[in-house]
Image 1 (spheres, rainbow, N blue to C red):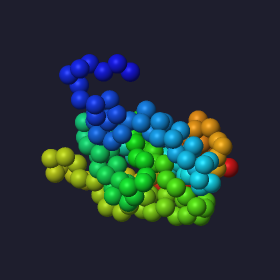
Image 2 (cartoon, rainbow, N blue to C red):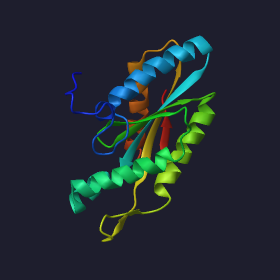
Image 3 (cartoon, rainbow, N blue to C red):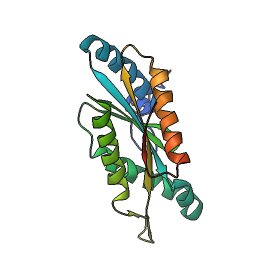
Image 4 (cartoon, one colour):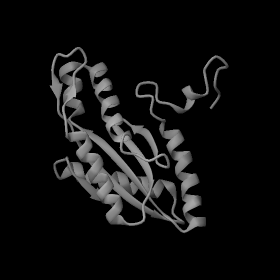
Length: 175
């Protein structure tokens, strides 16, 4: 990607609304982590989190308010991450995490923790007009090298869709 000289480097890797890393950075880091997982014989989890109810907020208070709520949503998730985790705005209202995961049980427990962090307290509507509650649907996929990044992300996305189909506000592990 060509970057005009007047744009700082961070503008290429950070989402302009949330200031979280963009998907491009996530994809690059996933490829790198998969190679590390193979050489170090470690397991990765890809966790995709979707904000249940954000469309309702956008309809009621507008997209700018929805964007502000998504920033708060992401900050609640980010507060639980370790410095080794990779966290990014994935697409739409989805955020994604790459995390070392020694087992499916540990990855699921962490994903449950993230979901509870999001739904634990209301999000204040900018301007103090009101408050909104959100929940999270979460998909988790484990990657044991060698595995292609696109396959792991697709598996996490499938698990997320299953969580949403089951009514949202839940965590599902990829098959």
